[in-house]
Length: 323
View (cartoon, rainbow, N blue to C red):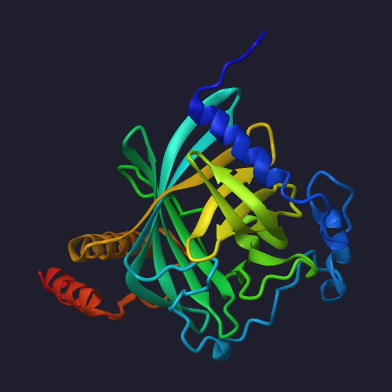
């Protein structure tokens, strides 16, 4: 039977093929660790004896001098930046479109001795929000962007019991890992993306290559940095493409029921929108303190004013919190 695809479906399938075929060869260490192939975790690299993916570089809080300024060329996220990603999940031959919106707020939070930028992420289906999350990232002095925790929450009438997906670096054995390297090197062995034993999270990543071209609907990008994320716990690998000066433009999951995402919008928020984002993130944190055992002992977020708009947000947010 011939199956016809809608333009969005065809574009998504083409995007997945572009990303998954971006490299013809993988680093020897990566070949040994990618799910679906024979794997010996200790072979991930000389520093990882008994460890499937060691940290790209040693995590040292004193090496995060200007940690909340996320200006890595492959993933710039200045406060007030709003990114929209169109996503299509394939589940049992059924397309499940949704929209992911990520906002770099004016809030910062100290985690494991490092000040992090608070990112607020929402997932929308059929025009309604069904999930929200706080994501904590920081940039070290070498330009590496690290993730130090996450608090995800489904949008429901009641709090999610125990917030099972939450993790915070330095709590319950969780460790921070690198999202995007400051100096990407294809010859590096796989490195730690994130680890949280309490929730069964172990993510690794490696640089695949700089692709000649990565295409999403209606646009193609040159010089994309392609990073593959995988788990020794056998989760399907995901390839993400980052473009200099823009950031994440596409992602594809390597399995039949996988998901593809592509960048559909990037803009700077107005002062009013930045205030709304900060306010919603503060409300989400209040629920995190009530729902999550790993979150409860973390210090509260602060609003860090880096420009005139952020200072206006700080004053307006202060007025709201006093009422």
